[in-house]
Image 1 (cartoon, helix red, strand yellow):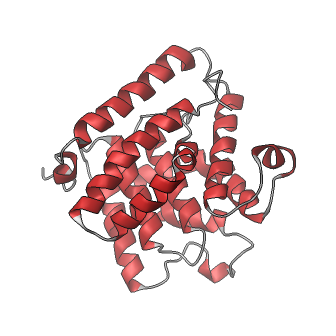
Image 2: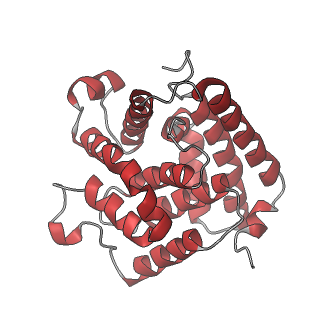
Length: 241
């Protein structure tokens, strides 16, 4: 069976970078997670991720403010999405297009008219979402971290919805990690990894959007680093804040 992303994985340094990131995640989850998978730890990871994603989207709320009162409107949208995220794991596995629509409908609820919730902006965006959904639905041997990084970048740069595209993209990335078995209890905080590397995150998304081979290559190398930073930000780590 043809692997449409095989050429990306074969780019210089990509396979080794992602193998290293996956090893770091596996070690963290094995050493710290097997005996500590209580729902409150998953909830803390999701909350930290929602806060980081909201800041990347323009929120000015601190984590403490989000924890205490929900924060500003952007933060509340991100938190609302985080509370429903794991329920979408089976949806992503069965019908990825429906999962993308639901991610947006939850994030943008109360912000957009109801008829725009979960609906792509136009025919071009519909086709891009279908292509991404087909990629996820395929029986692919592509490493899950690579797939998550591509889903994230595609959603963020295509911006298929009328609002909240960054929040949706980062939530979809986390969802792929759970659905593909990298992080079944969602203890890694990839959003915090992106926030910690914000300048590189934003510049590499611009490179990805160019469609150039060099931009795609750079995004993947960056994403491996961000996943490692996301593991470091897990609430399983005693020194993570």
